[in-house]
Length: 227
Image 1 (cartoon, helix red, strand yellow):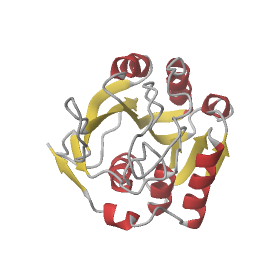
Image 2 (spheres, rainbow, N blue to C red; image 1 turned 180 degrees about the vertical axis):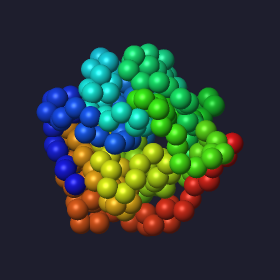
Image 3 (cartoon, one colour; image 1 turned 90 degrees about the vertical axis):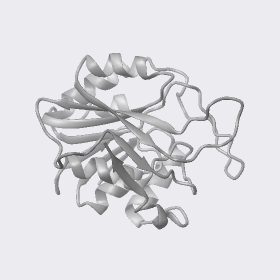
Image 4 (cartoon, rainbow, N blue to C red; image 1 turned 60 degrees about the horizontal axis):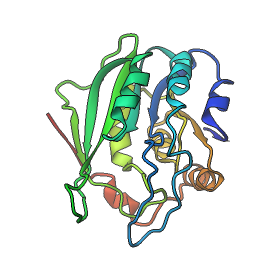
């Protein structure tokens, strides 16, 4: 496990060419997001009002990924057009996975029940299982360490389909460390980068010491696949 507190573009520039077997990441969506959940109070996500990094990010990810490897990049409907343009400059976009998170609150408009995940390939590589659909139904994580934290089981599904034991999985926006926790669980090596010192420390403690949010185990088996 290699956990780094720093700017991902600066750190990625130091990684060797073709050294990564799989990328699973959840960058800032460029929507200036701040959670208004009643139980948890979070600061705004760092750098979530600027997507100028996207082109350089995808360029660097393409460079460090090995040939015939997969990349997963989460994004939101409001900015998916910008994500898609930058992504397709370097990767072949195979599909846009829909994460149906099942939980949504009340409000004056249709509430958000899903998020997008760009699924791309550098070269040619198939997923391991046949007949998997592009909608993943998975309950969100209620006891969060990070305002946009993804469920462990969701990341586990993606990692199992696109990597093998001993592979190096990269997450340049590590957040609270979900991807790293799953990598450790599945016997993958992991490189995680996080610019926010507080979240970096949370992720480091979670990954290295197995300390995770209360009652997290109940979410491990909460996902299903739909065609």
